[in-house]
Length: 216
Ligand code: AMP
Image 1 (cartoon, rainbow, N blue to C red):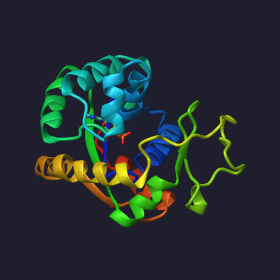
Image 2 (cartoon, rainbow, N blue to C red):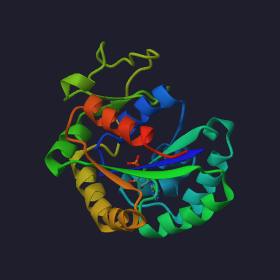
Image 3 (cartoon, helix red, strand yellow):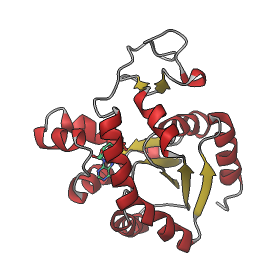
């Protein structure tokens, strides 16, 4: 079972690359943000933290993740999108996977500059049914029919935290907590850095190269 961690500032294309990886390799896509947005539907305190761009406690995040990794769709491998968010979560995660049948553990860092990331986030829309992500400001990422999912016909929605104000907060939280993860994984020798300002297909082919060279 392959563990693929995608690390990136908000709107670097984690969701898009995850969809492409699921399609090609049959991995499970695990987005802690998506799981938490589900919980927020019936939990006011989590809902307000998400709206303010604050991180949710490790207890809640790990309990959701532990349950999710037991699912059979994780057997081939899984992509972690939005997790770990800081070095403390990374250390706890390394402990946790000792008990799992993880054959390779790889970390892909998708880097993108702030201006492009802001443009991506303000235009981001997604399908609530199949979770596919689009962007109505970037031509290559627009749906074929405005407001409708190409795959399942779902009505596309905008996340309430995808505005330039919350974006600034989330980008700052990213730098404060997540950037040290890059050093952590670099020192472990399992980090691959990619420039996510390139087109999604170019980024994806670079990820394919990384996976093709793993020894498992
Ligand atoms: P995302 O969809 O990854 O951008 O996450 C949206 C929001 O969910 C974040 O701004 C945090 O409030 C929360 N969140 C997602 N993943 C985590 C995590 N690993 N630890 C703590 N909070 C998280």
